Amino acid sequence: MTVVGFLGFGEVAAHFSAALRDGGAEVLAFDVLLDRPGGREKLAARAHGAPPAFVPLPEMFGRAEVVLSTVTTDVALEAARSCAPHLRPGQLFVDLNAASPATKREIAAVVRAAGADFVEGAILSAVGVAGAKAKVLVCGARAAEAARRLGGLGLDFRDYGTEVGKASSFKMLRSVFSKGVEALLVESLLAARRAGVEEDLWREIVATLDAASFEEVGGNWLRTHATAHERRWHEMADVRAALGELGLDAPMTEATVALFERSTRLALREAFPAPAASASAVIAELDARIASSGGAVPATAAAKVRE
Image 1 (cartoon, one colour):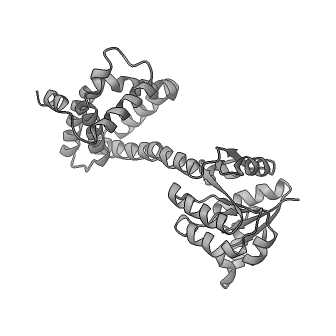
Image 2 (cartoon, one colour):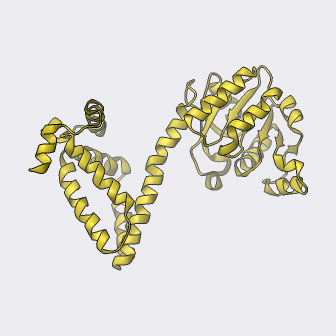
Image 3 (cartoon, helix red, strand yellow):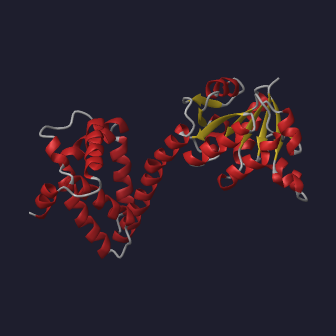
């Protein structure tokens, strides 16, 4: 029987531990609340079904073959450092905290120096919604093994390669989209509310995204950016003025204006005399122009903008 230990017992550990127990693992857990009055009872109340065996930190590390770190992000590195004396050769330490790639690499160094093996994990799904079915990308020298072992015990762990930092980079970059869309919706609907068209705008947004797959909708936005960015820049400048008339601070609109303006200044249109064949071609060309400009505005493009 595989013994899995949790370092920290919050929402993630509560969901994952139940699935691991049902999958046949022996589950242990340590949380700093164990050292506080009433802490054990509070932790047990978080569990889904029967709680795991709450044990002292040295015992948990002494018995667990796989340790899942599910503390809060701000203490992930310090937690690893404090646990280093208890790590042992052959033990898998899987960090599931939403830390940056740099922090994941620091934790990896601490774990490896103690003789154990490190695997980074990036939880992609909202655990409160997906529960133990949340998708987790794992990276590290033993990531494939971790995915196989934990997947066999009821979790959705997926091997994402050996490079530590890759999974957390993916998660953070995905957040540019997911959190960015959230921010755009908030700003759009705030403006719509002030203009008296909130429900109408919401229905239009939903209809736009429901009309076709996002592969088609998003892909079209990216492909046409190659040739329509200047027109969209001017349109968004007018939108910014309209939001100002509504008395609304609009940081997302400001950023959108700046992004379209940058593509215009970099003369992206010159690279696409015909419609772009793919979204990736547009992104690759824009990336190359940003890199070659060093952040400066090419003189010819700037002149065109002023004309």
